[in-house]
Length: 303
Length: 265
Ligand SMILES: Cc1cc2nc3c(=O)[nH]c(=O)nc-3n(C[C@H](O)[C@H](O)[C@H](O)COP(=O)(O)OP(=O)(O)OC[C@H]3O[C@@H](n4cnc5c(N)ncnc54)[C@H](O)[C@@H]3O)c2cc1C
Ligand SMILES: Cc1cc2nc3c(=O)[nH]c(=O)nc-3n(C[C@H](O)[C@H](O)[C@H](O)COP(=O)(O)O)c2cc1C
Ligand code: FES
Image (cartoon, rainbow over all chains, first blue to last red; front, side, top):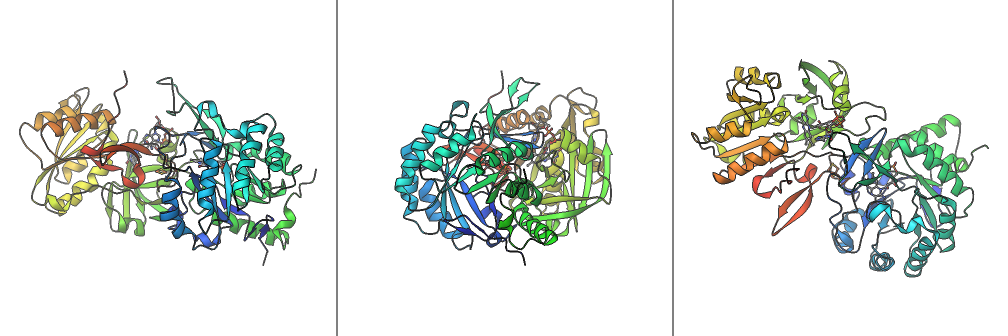
């Protein structure tokens, strides 16, 4: 038997596969397809303090081997989440991570303050990188200062581990990652989606009502991998890698490039059993290659 | 909701750019109701990436049918699949048409524009077995856009057609044909599926005549099972309006709940 578990320091996952925020609903949507106990963990849809409607439709456009979305973080807010969802998902033996959003730094703080009193959450993933809520994709993760400031504030309030989720829409990803680390983040996850545009040539209108959206899926994988490698080689907190993982082999690329765990996003729409299949494929690879502990692969890129 | 990774294509018919495919998927067939849909994985590669939604056109024992028109790459690739190949499908999804049971012994109108006829055939069959009399109104741009007409006639359905260019049946939109016919008969309910401007017109007519109506809406879908929040439409709920996931709470909505989009100027 291969040991697929990975130790992030603040939490040990039974395997490195985590379902990514916004692509796994609140977890419950996947109950008909997979046993959630099999997962390393899952991240629920981004939560603001209050319920939110999100952006006007159309919200989705397909691109070559990718998906552009401008969902705009609709959601049920922390109160309904704690009352209606958390009791139903906390029974699962897997890491439950809440993706925390905020219109302001204070809102990130109040979401965490509220959730800190509730049982059943393993960690927070600070979503300072959603490109779809402010004009031109503006978000804290675009500047080292705003990243530092948001992470420091939440760090003071949170009793739980913090994962800071970074945006790829920056010139120097390492600078931002180092800011998050300095501000006390326990881990870094990357990447969120790439700011993108799709045009309907018949109407000459953008395909999305929001004009810009975020590109995800296989199309972004090589760039995401490069960024994960850049960051993982320099920070000393764990890195969770994502971007275009559809198969076990994609996940392996991220682990070898230095990610301690991976998140699987868009793949969940294409194949609702994707996370389970990827875990099986990782297992198969390790057995074939004679690897007893998957952790030995992490950061093993030969350069 | 079931994932069937190996639904076998057991029949295929085609007319110009319209295709009818019969899929063997016993567990999905067993649970399917009119107005529900399936999500079809086009191929195992990355492009096109997302599954495509198709209404369930009919069911018969272990099989279901889909009826589609080629609209882009996904439907084009799908149209090239042949008998004995298998498809990875999810279904049945969505809520389906309502009110079938109450319609026993009554007359109803089913209005399909173009590929919008797809879910109405299943509905007509179910209504027939529950003892309602359906009149089907089937509209297309031109004669070749009415590929299912003969089949519907053969099945003994009462069907009236329209074409925009007058090449077959009533000349004009199917919404105008319905409006004209409503002077002569009053259905207990109208069910419609097709392009949004058509459904919006029918909704107006139904309201004028105080006839309850249900519409099957479309939007680009990321997942089909409530996980992406991509498919929302504006729907009246309580005193206000909400953006509702049509894959979960739809795709069928009663006329009074739908907030139609403004016509583009
Ligand atoms: C619940 C539901 C049931 C449907 N049932 C049927 C059916 O029974 N028969 C049938 O022929 N079609 C049906 N459709 C529409 C069908 O899903 C689209 O035509 C198809 O997804 C287009 O894929 P494509 O790759 O060929 O085209 P693309 O290249 O993806 O798109 C071609 C054009 O179609 C538009 N489009 C893309 N996806 C959708 C979508 N989901 N709905 C509407 N327009 C879309 C695009 O904006 C573009 O203008 C249904 C859609 C929904 C939401
Ligand atoms: C429809 C959709 C919704 C998303 N919603 C969120 C979200 O709420 N919070 C977040 O941090 N990331 C969100 N993301 C980003 C994903 O979690 C992930 O970072 C990104 O899609 C890249 O991974 P992928 O290529 O595997 O999808 C969303 C992505 C998609 C496609
Ligand atoms: S299509 Fe994903 S939520 Fe409806």
